[in-house]
Image (cartoon, rainbow, N blue to C red):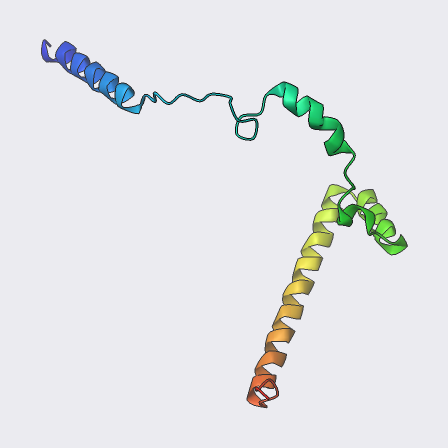
Length: 114
């Protein structure tokens, strides 16, 4: 029984040494707003960030795209999952057909260098 407290003491000493080895003494000063921006700096730039133009994917939508988004939004969760599965299967089938056509083109030497 006397070895149990000594094991516990040794384990504690090992943990203390490990903690000391992992301790960092680096000084992280805020001299550079690029590396360590202060909240004041970010809040002053917030208006500039909001005034930027929206990304192309958000603005380059035609009437069909908007109708499709509306249709997807009106589906239930299960219906949407079924639609996604169908699209994944369709993409897989198209990939298989493309692989066949590429193999055919290779055998017919259609894709050779000119």
